[in-house]
Image (tube, one colour):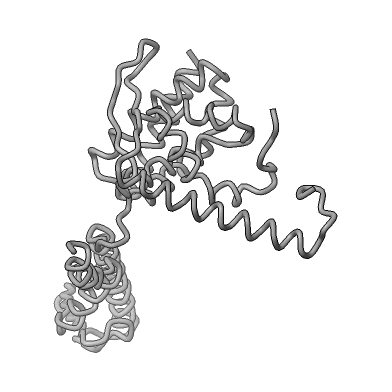
Length: 176
Length: 120
């Protein structure tokens, strides 16, 4: 019973890591099904502990399998999207924290009124804070184009988009 | 049984693992764990499943192997691998490369150490 639970836990961790390493659903299922059959055989012959030891950590096995499946001749669009997404989240966080710091600076100033200024960490942007009648109005404006360009560059670099050109160039040779 | 590869040098085994897998599968189709057992019985006692399974996936992704699921009486269906025509070509190329490499290594060792135990 405990052995079966340990095997199931390993297979769950393995499938989760495969997912995190960007393996497609069909491939993930196929790999996990094959591993389950192999693991059952190994456990019957050597015992569950030895069978799991032979596989090594689920994360490393999943990483090796995902790397084996990755076609290095094709762009990794999913990786590029994830990198651009993370960059966008990081920019939003920086914008949020900078704006909060700006508001704190305005609040620290005695008296009311309004203030506006640029953010050092986010060029091409401007924050305006307006304190009137006990209320607070905050606005963030700026040029979105430089940021969109940055996200595009991150996407293109992280997805290794130049492989599209390489694949297109090598196609006539392969067809020969 | 003779241990062919010292356990201290897993990199050496990794370099020839594709050749060994293609050779075994050219003999008959088989599934992952059975191949591990065959390799261990051949002398690679310290070989781990975690090394063999990704190598099989790599060979299949490269088109050197094809696979099919076959029902097993003892549990879930097993994934059986067989060598494709491309894999047969790859096997021949790898065998040639291996023979050239071992010949060159043996010649170098003989020329630098004529009394080397391995080459006697």
